[in-house]
Length: 250
Image (cartoon, rainbow, N blue to C red; front, top):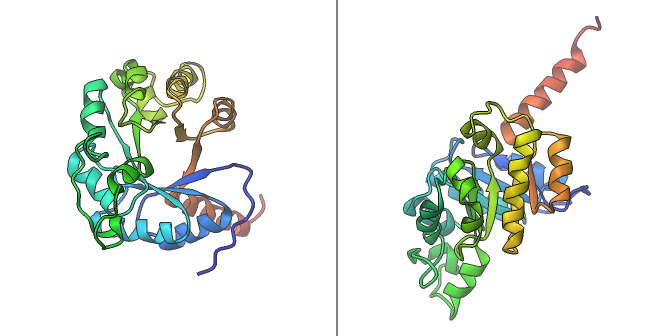
Protein backbone atom coordinates (compact mmCIF):
# COMPACT_ATOMS: atom_id res chain seq x y z
CA UNK A 1 0.00 0.00 0.00
CA UNK A 2 1.29 3.46 -0.88
CA UNK A 3 0.33 6.24 1.50
CA UNK A 4 0.91 9.86 0.47
CA UNK A 5 0.56 12.08 3.52
CA UNK A 6 -0.87 15.56 3.26
CA UNK A 7 0.99 18.41 4.93
CA UNK A 8 0.16 19.01 8.59
CA UNK A 9 0.65 22.23 10.59
CA UNK A 10 1.66 20.15 13.62
CA UNK A 11 4.80 18.06 13.96
CA UNK A 12 3.07 15.09 15.53
CA UNK A 13 -0.74 15.12 15.70
CA UNK A 14 -2.37 12.04 17.18
CA UNK A 15 -5.83 10.52 17.51
CA UNK A 16 -7.60 7.91 19.60
CA UNK A 17 -8.78 4.69 17.97
CA UNK A 18 -11.83 3.55 19.92
CA UNK A 19 -12.69 0.41 17.92
CA UNK A 20 -11.01 -1.84 15.34
CA UNK A 21 -11.02 0.31 12.20
CA UNK A 22 -8.18 0.05 9.68
CA UNK A 23 -9.87 2.58 7.39
CA UNK A 24 -9.69 5.20 10.13
CA UNK A 25 -5.96 4.54 10.44
CA UNK A 26 -5.50 4.82 6.67
CA UNK A 27 -7.43 8.10 6.45
CA UNK A 28 -5.66 9.57 9.47
CA UNK A 29 -2.29 8.62 8.04
CA UNK A 30 -3.12 10.23 4.68
CA UNK A 31 -4.20 13.42 6.45
CA UNK A 32 -0.90 13.64 8.30
CA UNK A 33 -1.54 12.06 11.68
CA UNK A 34 1.67 10.50 12.91
CA UNK A 35 0.43 8.87 16.11
CA UNK A 36 -2.52 6.63 16.94
CA UNK A 37 -3.51 5.54 20.44
CA UNK A 38 -5.31 2.21 20.70
CA UNK A 39 -7.77 2.88 23.51
CA UNK A 40 -8.36 -0.27 25.51
CA UNK A 41 -9.54 1.66 28.58
CA UNK A 42 -12.63 3.23 27.01
CA UNK A 43 -12.76 1.58 23.58
CA UNK A 44 -14.19 -1.73 22.37
CA UNK A 45 -10.96 -3.66 21.83
CA UNK A 46 -10.01 -7.10 23.05
CA UNK A 47 -6.50 -8.56 22.68
CA UNK A 48 -6.95 -10.05 19.19
CA UNK A 49 -8.40 -6.91 17.63
CA UNK A 50 -5.87 -4.72 19.43
CA UNK A 51 -3.01 -6.81 18.04
CA UNK A 52 -4.41 -6.52 14.50
CA UNK A 53 -4.93 -2.76 14.78
CA UNK A 54 -1.39 -2.25 16.08
CA UNK A 55 0.02 -4.23 13.14
CA UNK A 56 -2.01 -2.27 10.57
CA UNK A 57 -1.15 1.14 12.02
CA UNK A 58 2.55 0.30 12.18
CA UNK A 59 2.45 -0.90 8.57
CA UNK A 60 1.15 2.58 7.70
CA UNK A 61 4.24 4.07 9.31
CA UNK A 62 2.46 5.46 12.35
CA UNK A 63 3.70 5.55 15.91
CA UNK A 64 1.35 3.33 17.91
CA UNK A 65 0.72 3.66 21.62
CA UNK A 66 -1.76 1.58 23.57
CA UNK A 67 -3.72 2.97 26.48
CA UNK A 68 -4.14 -0.24 28.43
CA UNK A 69 -7.36 -1.04 30.23
CA UNK A 70 -5.56 -1.12 33.58
CA UNK A 71 -2.00 -0.52 34.72
CA UNK A 72 -1.30 -4.19 35.40
CA UNK A 73 1.32 -6.67 34.23
CA UNK A 74 -0.66 -8.72 31.68
CA UNK A 75 -2.31 -5.72 30.02
CA UNK A 76 1.01 -3.90 29.68
CA UNK A 77 2.93 -6.94 28.44
CA UNK A 78 0.20 -7.80 25.94
CA UNK A 79 0.36 -4.35 24.35
CA UNK A 80 4.14 -4.42 24.06
CA UNK A 81 4.26 -8.02 22.85
CA UNK A 82 1.71 -7.11 20.15
CA UNK A 83 4.22 -4.58 18.80
CA UNK A 84 2.99 -1.34 20.32
CA UNK A 85 5.64 1.38 20.43
CA UNK A 86 4.65 2.12 23.99
CA UNK A 87 1.96 2.04 26.63
CA UNK A 88 -0.08 4.74 28.32
CA UNK A 89 -0.99 3.80 31.89
CA UNK A 90 -4.32 5.17 33.17
CA UNK A 91 -5.53 5.98 36.68
CA UNK A 92 -2.15 5.99 38.40
CA UNK A 93 -2.77 6.83 42.05
CA UNK A 94 0.60 8.11 43.21
CA UNK A 95 4.33 7.46 43.29
CA UNK A 96 4.20 3.91 44.68
CA UNK A 97 1.62 2.85 42.10
CA UNK A 98 3.62 4.47 39.30
CA UNK A 99 6.83 2.76 40.39
CA UNK A 100 5.18 -0.68 40.49
CA UNK A 101 3.16 -0.33 37.27
CA UNK A 102 5.86 1.17 35.07
CA UNK A 103 8.25 -1.64 36.02
CA UNK A 104 6.02 -4.00 34.00
CA UNK A 105 6.94 -2.05 30.84
CA UNK A 106 10.71 -2.54 31.12
CA UNK A 107 12.84 -5.69 31.06
CA UNK A 108 15.18 -6.44 33.98
CA UNK A 109 17.29 -5.07 35.44
CA UNK A 110 15.42 -1.80 34.81
CA UNK A 111 11.97 -3.33 35.40
CA UNK A 112 10.20 -6.68 35.61
CA UNK A 113 8.67 -7.14 32.13
CA UNK A 114 8.47 -10.78 31.11
CA UNK A 115 10.15 -11.92 27.90
CA UNK A 116 7.67 -13.31 25.36
CA UNK A 117 9.64 -13.38 22.10
CA UNK A 118 7.44 -13.68 18.99
CA UNK A 119 6.69 -10.46 17.13
CA UNK A 120 9.05 -8.37 19.25
CA UNK A 121 12.04 -10.32 17.87
CA UNK A 122 10.60 -10.92 14.37
CA UNK A 123 9.77 -14.52 15.37
CA UNK A 124 13.47 -15.35 15.62
CA UNK A 125 15.93 -15.81 18.48
CA UNK A 126 16.52 -12.53 20.28
CA UNK A 127 19.59 -10.66 18.99
CA UNK A 128 22.33 -9.52 21.32
CA UNK A 129 21.44 -6.49 23.39
CA UNK A 130 17.75 -6.85 22.49
CA UNK A 131 16.66 -6.17 26.07
CA UNK A 132 18.57 -2.90 26.28
CA UNK A 133 17.39 -1.69 22.87
CA UNK A 134 13.76 -2.65 23.54
CA UNK A 135 13.80 -0.81 26.85
CA UNK A 136 14.96 2.29 24.98
CA UNK A 137 12.61 1.87 22.01
CA UNK A 138 9.31 1.26 23.78
CA UNK A 139 7.92 4.16 25.77
CA UNK A 140 6.03 4.10 29.04
CA UNK A 141 3.73 7.09 29.51
CA UNK A 142 2.12 7.68 32.89
CA UNK A 143 -1.26 9.38 32.90
CA UNK A 144 -1.54 12.19 35.42
CA UNK A 145 -5.27 12.32 36.06
CA UNK A 146 -5.69 11.79 39.81
CA UNK A 147 -5.00 14.20 42.66
CA UNK A 148 -2.39 11.91 44.22
CA UNK A 149 -0.57 11.44 40.92
CA UNK A 150 -0.44 15.20 40.47
CA UNK A 151 0.85 15.67 44.00
CA UNK A 152 3.65 13.19 43.24
CA UNK A 153 4.22 14.31 39.65
CA UNK A 154 7.80 15.52 40.09
CA UNK A 155 8.84 12.23 41.70
CA UNK A 156 6.91 10.19 39.11
CA UNK A 157 8.62 12.04 36.27
CA UNK A 158 11.99 11.21 37.80
CA UNK A 159 11.41 7.43 37.73
CA UNK A 160 13.80 5.66 35.36
CA UNK A 161 10.94 3.47 34.11
CA UNK A 162 8.88 6.52 33.06
CA UNK A 163 9.51 7.89 29.57
CA UNK A 164 6.85 10.61 29.51
CA UNK A 165 3.77 12.09 31.15
CA UNK A 166 0.33 12.05 29.55
CA UNK A 167 -2.25 14.40 31.04
CA UNK A 168 -5.85 13.30 31.50
CA UNK A 169 -7.47 16.75 31.83
CA UNK A 170 -11.07 15.64 32.22
CA UNK A 171 -10.49 13.14 35.01
CA UNK A 172 -8.03 15.49 36.71
CA UNK A 173 -10.57 18.31 36.80
CA UNK A 174 -13.22 15.93 38.13
CA UNK A 175 -10.82 14.58 40.75
CA UNK A 176 -10.19 18.11 42.01
CA UNK A 177 -13.94 18.63 42.40
CA UNK A 178 -14.10 21.28 39.70
CA UNK A 179 -16.49 19.37 37.49
CA UNK A 180 -16.17 19.36 33.73
CA UNK A 181 -12.83 20.39 32.24
CA UNK A 182 -13.10 24.01 31.06
CA UNK A 183 -9.62 24.53 29.57
CA UNK A 184 -8.80 27.62 31.63
CA UNK A 185 -7.80 28.81 35.09
CA UNK A 186 -6.96 25.97 37.47
CA UNK A 187 -7.17 23.45 34.64
CA UNK A 188 -4.32 25.15 32.82
CA UNK A 189 -2.35 25.64 36.04
CA UNK A 190 -2.41 21.85 36.45
CA UNK A 191 -1.16 21.38 32.90
CA UNK A 192 1.70 23.82 33.44
CA UNK A 193 2.88 22.01 36.56
CA UNK A 194 2.78 18.59 34.90
CA UNK A 195 4.50 19.77 31.73
CA UNK A 196 7.26 21.43 33.72
CA UNK A 197 7.75 18.31 35.84
CA UNK A 198 8.37 16.31 32.67
CA UNK A 199 10.65 18.96 31.20
CA UNK A 200 12.72 19.13 34.38
CA UNK A 201 13.64 15.48 33.75
CA UNK A 202 14.23 16.00 30.04
CA UNK A 203 11.13 13.93 29.22
CA UNK A 204 8.20 14.59 26.86
CA UNK A 205 4.60 15.22 27.77
CA UNK A 206 1.35 14.95 25.82
CA UNK A 207 -2.39 15.45 26.20
CA UNK A 208 -5.69 15.56 24.31
CA UNK A 209 -6.54 19.01 22.98
CA UNK A 210 -10.07 20.33 23.48
CA UNK A 211 -9.76 23.94 22.32
CA UNK A 212 -7.53 26.54 20.73
CA UNK A 213 -6.67 27.68 24.26
CA UNK A 214 -5.37 24.17 24.97
CA UNK A 215 -3.47 24.18 21.70
CA UNK A 216 -1.77 27.50 22.37
CA UNK A 217 -0.82 26.54 25.92
CA UNK A 218 0.49 23.18 24.76
CA UNK A 219 2.65 24.79 22.08
CA UNK A 220 4.06 27.25 24.60
CA UNK A 221 5.06 24.31 26.82
CA UNK A 222 6.65 22.30 23.98
CA UNK A 223 4.19 19.42 23.90
CA UNK A 224 5.47 16.23 22.24
CA UNK A 225 2.19 15.41 20.51
CA UNK A 226 -1.44 16.50 20.69
CA UNK A 227 -4.39 14.12 20.53
CA UNK A 228 -7.01 15.96 18.53
CA UNK A 229 -9.99 13.60 18.15
CA UNK A 230 -11.08 9.97 17.98
CA UNK A 231 -12.48 7.85 15.16
CA UNK A 232 -16.06 7.92 16.46
CA UNK A 233 -16.13 11.69 16.97
CA UNK A 234 -14.68 12.15 13.49
CA UNK A 235 -17.42 9.91 12.08
CA UNK A 236 -20.10 11.87 13.93
CA UNK A 237 -18.71 15.17 12.66
CA UNK A 238 -18.68 13.87 9.10
CA UNK A 239 -22.26 12.63 9.32
CA UNK A 240 -23.36 15.93 10.87
CA UNK A 241 -21.72 17.84 8.02
CA UNK A 242 -23.64 15.68 5.54
CA UNK A 243 -26.93 16.53 7.24
CA UNK A 244 -26.14 20.23 7.16
CA UNK A 245 -25.49 19.97 3.43
CA UNK A 246 -29.03 18.77 2.68
CA UNK A 247 -30.96 20.73 5.31
CA UNK A 248 -33.53 23.17 4.00
CA UNK A 249 -32.48 26.79 4.52
CA UNK A 250 -34.44 28.51 7.26
